[in-house]
Length: 335
Image 1 (tube, rainbow, N blue to C red):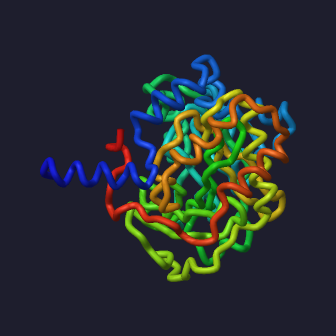
Image 2: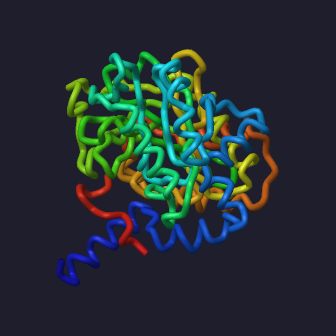
């Protein structure tokens, strides 16, 4: 890329209010997220414990594996459960999550239909304990959780996995949200880097605005063929209030809140992220920066969760895309 093209691209990103990685790290994460609070969210077991203590709804924790000996004793319990999720407590980016949707004789069935033996499951948990998926490669523990059953509204919009909702919460205000939909390319995981679809959501209504896969606009799910037009997330107000409440629970000013909609239990907090990514801006077609600056201009105002949500709905809601990020641009290069 030539110098002139780079400068034009940089100017375009600024005009769209795109928050870049450096600015996010220094002006928001560094300023509003106390370092001593990071372990609470970097460790999913710690954040789940914190959420339970605060009365926040989360997927049911079945067991925690801390040693190799624990793995051997688990086989009867896993056979009894039939379906479950195994995840590393310190994992990131969806790595190391194993979703089992049922049994086929002596085999465990993944969401993709692939069959695993208990030895495969045992090896996976051993890798978790050894730190293969953890931040920094440190030793870890494996969490076994109840399988989430996605709300029926998502049946046509996700493939081989459960969709989740990422909401950016700044100083307790939900400022931007997107729905992440699993695909075959993402191996049933709602991870954009692995090929999931990101759908920008109207913060006021939960209605889909635009969708992207690998940073490129799409209009239909690549596997189900279903159009995204008309997609609206149910229980939206409850989702916003749960996300906003996580600020008071975690004590982090700039926070990513990941939620799922279970068909039986409604909105559940999946995990918290102290360093949420920037791709949410591409999915929404607008930048985070103007919204963050608007909240900063309020100062240290004391407002209830309900009032913070009402403010966000009033000031950040939009029923159509008002701007678009250029196709394929990497927002991380913006200063």
